[in-house]
Length: 355
Image (cartoon, rainbow, N blue to C red):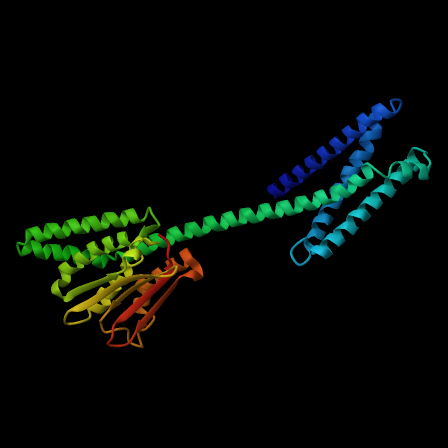
């Protein structure tokens, strides 16, 4: 309610200023042309009345702008319509003004009509188009504000999604398992290995916290982070965890969302390698084709059974990764999952290549 009163007050002040400007112009003209006439009354009454009429007419013009827009595909019809309407408004104001002069000032109708056609009368046409231009300017301003607001909301949601993904990616069970491995090494007297593993865990957590401050990183930096993560996992799985890296040199400079590969590698280890009794292999690939970056993470584990497809593994890592890709690149990015029972899982990401 308060905003509405502020709006109406601003409109009242605005049209009052229009009336004041019009009255001032006419007042000085009357002082020069007819000094014996009461210039204040002769200027203020009709010009403030004119401002009131335009204040009442402006909403109608703005409504007609919406119904008959000057836009692509409507130019000819829109221009013709508004030319006709502005001419009609000019004619109505013109006849009304001449009628008022002939009645209240007892002047002859036709001489006054012919004498006053030019000048102020043609300005009414210009006022019509000024109101129309104001409507389009306001519309552009509102669209710009809406786009700014939408961009700010998208950025906020993106940051929140990334933080949520980061929290879910470094699961507590990973930290607990790592700390348990460190405890086992200490009990077995392998203190140097325990210290090394603890240092790697500390470095990994530090990099994870730094990742919250930068939404993007290079593929090279992402692989450096994965190297620390994999070294920690190797302390747990020992010789059972084998990792192959096949990344083209040109792809290393690619800009990618921070920690976009970590949950995929974690899935491959937890659901691929850990599910096998013998050694398991994780392959990480990266290549550039034209303006597209291709990233792959695959394992040779048991794969996803038909009954479990789209539930467990999709719910933990893939859904967060897919959500981040959509919010960052929209339809320009894709994430596909291929799996057959007994033949592992392959996750393939395609996104725009930027270096």
